[in-house]
Image (cartoon, rainbow, N blue to C red):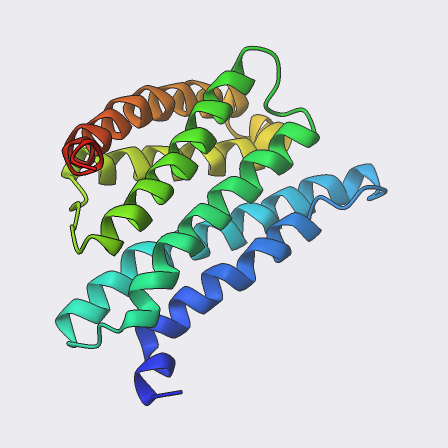
Length: 194
């Protein structure tokens, strides 16, 4: 493997992937009630640091001229792993439930569909740039998940933390539909040509 595979931006991406099982471990059942809040805050901290690496790795790769093929490949995968694992975890432990499940489903479906479209277009050497709105969507999504990971522990510090997280999740889902439509509109002409 080249030195580029172990540059700082790529190490941040690897760290984001490594954070996924750590966040999940914080929700392993059978913690005592007193520990539950501790483990929720631990999950929030790990998730927050991992989310920061999402913004840092690409920025550092560009300003230090350390972009690499492995970084371009793993960065979106790391993002999707972090978000998907957190949404599944929050659904399993019922912080996300009832109608809010639809927001999580919309986000997960969009991530899978856009990944497939990007992979198809990459084979055609067609690039679909990330829009500013998509970046806002990602930010709102990460903040929503952070609030939801805090859940009942967060409610004790800031009332309605869970409700704010669910509201932000729905806002992210609406933006997800809009940005997903944008990607498909941009990519569809290349698909239809076949």
